[in-house]
Image (cartoon, rainbow, N blue to C red):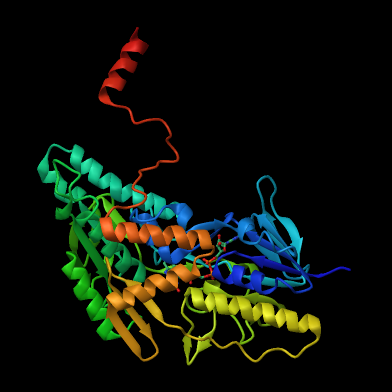
Length: 438
Ligand SMILES: Cc1cc2nc3c(=O)[nH]c(=O)nc-3n(C[C@H](O)[C@H](O)[C@H](O)COP(=O)(O)OP(=O)(O)OC[C@H]3O[C@@H](n4cnc5c(N)ncnc54)[C@H](O)[C@@H]3O)c2cc1C
C-alpha cells in the first residue's frame, strides 16, 4: 500500500513536534535537516558561557526517532521548492538539487540572526543561533581572559576584558548575566596578572528597557539584577558601527575585542522558495490553518511563519513552533482519514521566562508576573522538562546542581576546530627556524 508522502523540512521545535505527532499515522515521512541534531536553543547561552557542553543541549535526530518506523531522516540542505512538481530540492553531501517528492510539505526552517542590513558587523560580532556559534563565542570569551593574562602591559587589560553585547532581549540579558557570574565564580581565583572580576560587561539596546517583550515591572527587575551583577546597561542607544576595535554607539566609542550580537533575527528563505507573501520581517504569511494561501498541501510553521493574533504576529518562541507542528500533523491526519478539519489554529500561551545570573529569573504567564529565585526554579524545571531525552535531563540537572554549589563550569575549553596543531611557542618557533636554517 502506498502511503501519503509527508516531507518535513527542519527538525527544530516545530518540525520535530510535527514528525512525532504523525508517529502512528498512515504516512511515509522524510524529515530533512542540514544538521544531524535537534538543538535546544534556549540553553545555547549556557554553552557559550561554559556551563554546559554542546552535547548536553543537542541530540542526534536519528536517535530521537529510532523507534518511529514511518520516518526517514535525511541530512541535507533544502535549497528550493518546486510547487508545480510537488518536490523539495535538496543538496546533500555530494549531489545538488536532488528532488524529494511530497503530498504534504511542512516547512519548519526557523530563523537566523539579522544584522539589520549591516552584514559587515558579522565579522566582528558573532551571533548566537547554532552550536558552532555557541562554541565560537565560548572560545572568544575564554580567549579574551587568556590574552589579557599573557599581556604584560596592564593598560591594555581593560580593553581586552571589555565584553559588549548588542541587543537586550532574552539572549542578550541571559548572556550578560552568565558572563558576569562566570567572572565572579569560576575564573575569579585562577589568574595571576589580571583580576577577572574587573571585566567590564556592557549591554546595549536602542530600546528604552531590557526584555521589552516582558512587562515594565519585570524589565525593571531584570535591569536592577544585571546592574547588581556589575553589568553596564546602556539603553536608548543605537549601535552605529562595529569594527575590530569595538563599537560606536550614539557617537561614543567603547573599545572591546569581544562584541557579541544578540539583536534581531531574520527568517529562513522559505518565502522565496514558495514565492509567498511575507510580513515586514520576511516571514511567510500563513492562514489560520497554517497553510500557505493557494497551497492547502503546504504548511509553514514556527519562526519561519507569520500568523497574527489580536493584530500582532505570534512570537518567535519554541511553544508556538511546537503547537503549530502538532496542529499541522492533526490536520494532515484528519484529511487522510476523511474527517473534518480541526478549527483554526489557536495558540495557548504558557508564558515567557528569562534568566538573569545565578538563581534569578523573570517569569510572565497570564496575570502571573514574578521575579527571583522561585521564578528561576520554575525556569529550571520547565527547561529540563523540554530537553529532548531523559539522559540530557539527568546530565543537565546534575551539572546545574554542581555549578550552583561549587561555581565550577562544565565545559571551559577553548577548542579551535580549524587548527588542531598545538599553539606555537616562541621556543618552538626558534627551534623550527634553526632546523630549517640547518
Ligand atoms: C539563543 C536563543 C535563545 C532562545 N531562547 C528561547 C527561550 O528561552 N524560550 C523560547 O520559547 N524560545 C527561545 N528561543 C526561540 C526558539 O528557539 C525558536 O522560536 C524555535 O527554535 C523555533 O522553532 P522552529 O522549529 O521554527 O525553528 P528551529 O528550532 O530554529 O529549527 C529550524 C531547523 O531547520 C533547519 N534548517 C533551516 N534551514 C534549513 C534548510 N535550508 N535545509 C534543511 N534544514 C534547515 C535547522 O538546521 C533547524 O534544525 C531562542 C532562540 C535562540 C536563538
